[in-house]
Image 1 (cartoon, rainbow, N blue to C red):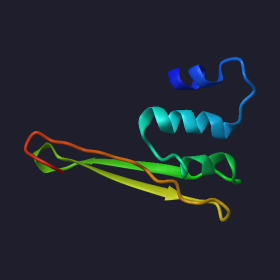
Image 2: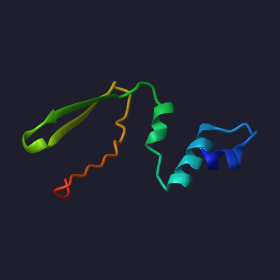
Image 3: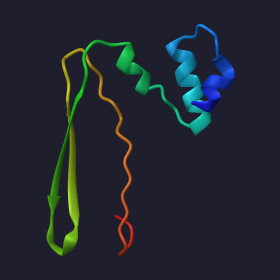
Image 4: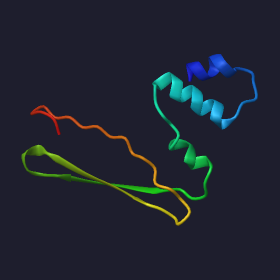
Length: 85
């Protein structure tokens, strides 16, 4: 947000200006994120959590979409003390 305000404080700007500042400040490609305001429909995200044996947690992520909506990428990370997931 700091970069966005440095660049555009007091200006009339576009959504693309906002996304560009977010992407530059975080070194990220937000091109897929911009789909949420350029297409009709909203993906429904479901997260199911299941605690397995030995304290492990299983997560199942799924999306359901209206016919006109495109899938949204979901970044994720995990870690555990015993090593990589």
